[in-house]
Image 1 (spheres, rainbow, N blue to C red):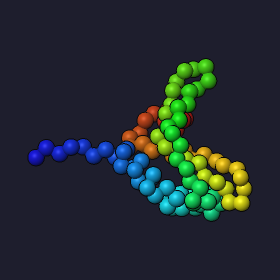
Image 2: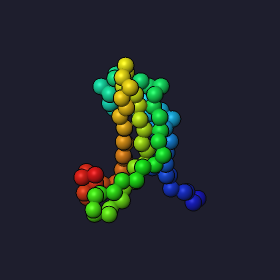
Image 3: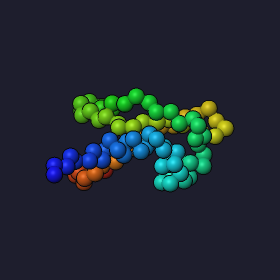
Length: 91
C-alpha cells in the first residue's frame, strides 16, 4: 500500500481559517476578551522584506480584528512550523 504524506501545513491553515476565534480563545484568552469575534478579517498574503538586506518573508495567514468599542485594528500573525529550524525564533 502506497500512502501519500499528510500536508500538515495546509491542514493547520484550514483549521485556523475555519475556527480563528476559537483558536484565539484557546491560546490567547486575554486577546479574545478585547476583540470583536465578528470583525475578524483575513487579508491577502503579505510579503515582508528586511530593510536593505533583501531577505523576503511571506506570512502564511494574516488577519485583522477590531478592538471592542474602538475603531482601532491590530494584525494577528500566526506562524507554525512542523520542524525545528535554527534562527527561526528570530523571525
